[in-house]
Image (cartoon, rainbow, N blue to C red):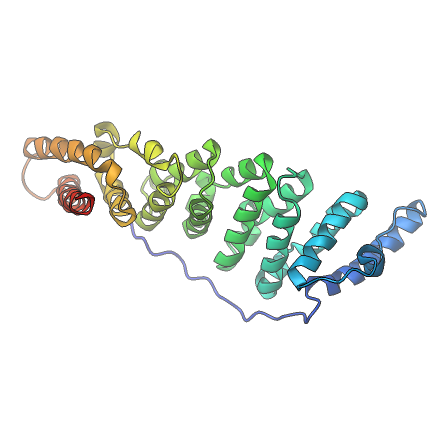
Length: 311
């Protein structure tokens, strides 16, 4: 299975100016206020001046996070509308820098709140095919993943649920971005560990194969998590290896690049098993035998490298 993915276009991005997404909020607030006033005359979107109340901020990030927290806490009826007007496929395509900034600020503003509206909106960017199959935006995919992690258990579960068979088959590259964000976070979460492990060992292409690059990157990301080595160790068994030695070539490459010397003993056991298995296979052209022989070579090189590092 080839490891090259479809190339996505990267159109130029535009910046909305100093006020960024807050410029849009002023307009959205007017529209939302009009609708709310027509409904009951009370549930209106506040003016920016009403929210800030003359406060001065040291930087725009702090200002924006304060604004988001105020809306979520003081004007909860307007919170879903605010999220909806700022997290759109259109912005994902042509206003990527503005959207990335909003996503990062929403994560900080909602940290440890487990806010369901925030989780649902952010999860859409990693589960909705209109986003991740459109164009390649690794910076937004990773920002959404980190914000979901920050928000709480519901956000982390939503992120884990993005690792599906359909997602893998449609766009494995975006799963690499999500796995990388999870690995960089260092979060200890069993759902996320299982999700990244699925990308490495379980999810398959339409013909039952796998994408080597996605496997390798998922392994590297998994090994950056506190419980990652243990999660990976459970897959280093002869049943799984002999069932798909081609996929395990990429697994071993990931272990080598992560330089996880705690797995050296497990790799030595696998190398011994492969050494015993190879002579039992009939000689001659055989893709399975070739994959197993190549795996043996990678195992030996990786073991040697890990043992030399540990000295």
